[in-house]
Length: 124
Image (tube, rainbow, N blue to C red; front, side, top):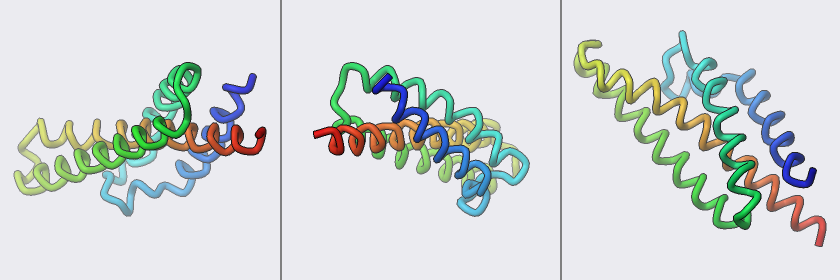
């Protein structure tokens, strides 16, 4: 049960983020900005749950924060290359789309790791 509470907290935070739709002003396409976060969030929650069973939360926070930054950079690179090619470059479009899915997954995992670390700190 102690592994599920951080996942629940992160899921609530991700639901609030998805409702606010911060991906659209950050560069996601308006048609699929919420959908990418909805696809990525459950993946990130599952990965963080499985990783949190065996690993301490501090390395997970660092790892998932770096992964979130790299996924966001991939999405922005895909966006700029897709726009520069006048919507002709399919690979850039896929980098843009899947980069946002990865950003949602890594952000959900990072939030889970932060919640796990804060709950462990309160328990001691």
